Image (cartoon, rainbow, N blue to C red; front, top):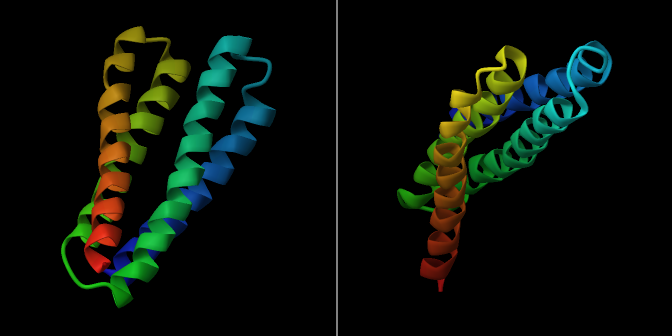
Length: 123
């Protein structure tokens, strides 16, 4: 799990920074202010949960059990669904893609719930 989650954190961190720079420089004059803000929300959530995924990777070495693995998987799913749907919505203008975003948010919340349950069980 350590290597997998570290590699995914590196990927999501790299793409998060690249997409943030792309939005700031390449999309500034192409998207409305509202769509640019939505895109930046996707970048923010991606980068925040990349750090959470990095933490999960480190925890996977020290804490036994499946909850750490579930947290990492849910963070990955949440990043793809939440941030990915916001990116696609703003770049394509297809507003129906917004229906996917809450499922990504639920995955992110479930990841945090798994971390909380793991901490609770540590006693």
